[in-house]
Image (cartoon, rainbow, N blue to C red; front, side, top):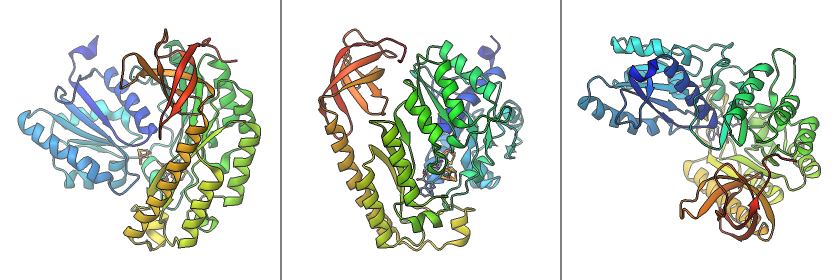
Length: 448
Ligand code: SAM
Ligand code: SF4
Ligand code: F3S
């Protein structure tokens, strides 16, 4: 095999699941180009940081790594350091001046160029490939995934939504969808490789629009569900404005589509949602929540929240707390607002909320949500749930850890089960983040 002779590489992945999926694409491209995967960063000839720019600590997070790599380069002169993903796409060539240790930069649409970029970097050219390529979906590349139970399948790239706070449209470019046939080919490959869970990915996954036959996301989801009847199907991230009744029906009707919707709300105040350019108010959001709960009994909802966006007043913050009490999300990713260069908020809105107030509001949001999450878990005690076993539990080799379709972590006695099995578990105990239960037996591989 040609890659066994090549130089070795190691990828550090930061950020969202899109970046994790992209690291699998980068790995496939480099292996095809004759490079091989290094066992560790220390062994690698090339280290690539695949970066995230979504919050303002983005550069600090990689600075530490780059300092470490500067030391490593002193010890091993031939080491090459590349930075890929959203940070170089945001900061452009300026990164090369900020960090002399960097040998090459690659934005999210230029990974097919990586073998050539590395060749140029070996000649000391410090190349930067940062152009957007609207046609690039990496169709035809078979991602090299880590061994595990779940596989990510990107179905859209980029984002057209232009939420006022968000840098993603500037780091990932305009939205484009994978052709339906390419998604289905990828799903078939994933099934053949024996994965038990498929997660369809996109920054705004439910605005999927097939460039070949015009299928929408609900239609794609139904087709994937039929093609992979022995896999659980997840999808993320859904934008609330693009949840159609047909999509809700698809989830309700298909036994292998997980009853979990991640539905970022960002704020409980319609005034803030308007400023954020989210494309909906809180009433429409609550109607969508009601529809989901009506059609999909037991559906689990999770969300993203931002505390202290530009112009947020106490009453807006109170509205967010009230929303949390009303919807009772299973879980949430919670952040305080950080201004991002180039976004609409950066250009046109004043960052009015002092940092101490942002932090205090965020803490109130976290405290409330943690207590709601704990109550949701407590309510599950006594129920029997369908768990996809993922791995041995960290505490004991006699226990397995897995997730319910509603995305709750469950630890249970191994019995005869192995990672990848569907297991029926009687929940006996709930802690703040995990359920513990008793193995009731392995379930059939096919969902019905
Ligand atoms: N596409 C998804 C959506 O529409 O919700 C999520 C995209 S973003 C990668 C993930 C989350 O980061 C957002 O939902 C938001 O809560 C948070 N986020 C994005 N920009 C932010 C900023 N400037 N400050 C704080 N949080 C931010
Ligand atoms: Fe960012 Fe909004 Fe697009 Fe999500 S939908 S990636 S928050 S612009
Ligand atoms: Fe971060 Fe880029 Fe994802 S900014 S959240 S890695 S799309």
